[in-house]
Image (cartoon, rainbow, N blue to C red; front, top):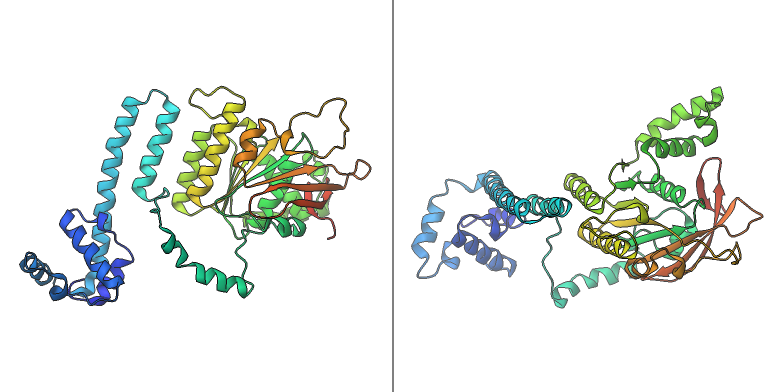
Length: 400
């Protein structure tokens, strides 16, 4: 880097001062990249001081050629990772010896390992003028009609209201039993996972049940026919054709992890391979918080807090399903849900960025349901009519 401006350009995009074993090398790198960022020329003359001149000249003379910069960077990065892993190993040993709750120890150990391997969120705090440096581009894009919305569900009316599934947001879909919230979640994932990568943690259904739903929706074959072994020859062919189409979905399904700590660990491991755009949980009240927290409001409070932190850590949209409290016997059976109907509602309502209720709007029309956006931190609330096709467990915009 001292003998080639091009080498400095390459290294400044990859290395940090913390990657160097010797502190004085890290400090020198920080000084060089600081000068480079201000447009100053960097070489042995401009960087050196009276106290460091001989050392810096020696460093420059010891490098045979600048053409090997990429290989040199690889060596530094590799050694830096090894040192981080060794530190993490020592930290994990301390955790195992000092934390009594095994689940909590495993969660903290996974965080330490993810940090060492670059899998955890480690963005530095930014002052306002640094954040504003990108505001001009955002304003310009908006003026040109470039949307900054999240991943579209492709359910038109719903996307118009919520603007898609935003990275870093906690999105809650709530309904009473058997209204179709799990089906809506699977539909959304089936629609978006052709491009976006997602993970679904399901405690309500098995992997086989979810696959059956996706295949039948894709093939337009009644789910009951597949489950009862009564499909026709034509339906058999449609299902065969649906298999490779469903296989294209970039969706990971986990039906074994029942604790919040386990979900966090699985997500970190998945995200370490490739970032996740959506993390889905079916459903909140079936997840265990661990750590000795008793089931009930306190447990749901802890779970929603950690789901929101997970969304921010991985810059993914976390979609969580929730049960509603049972309606009083004397209440109208078609009353629209309200935020106060959320089971253990305080923390869910507080932590969620978007709350959508799924409601059977017209008891005389089983093919019509309503999505009620009751909370939207970044935009409007409202209602959207949905078409429900129970044979295929499929939701769509009502006007399609």
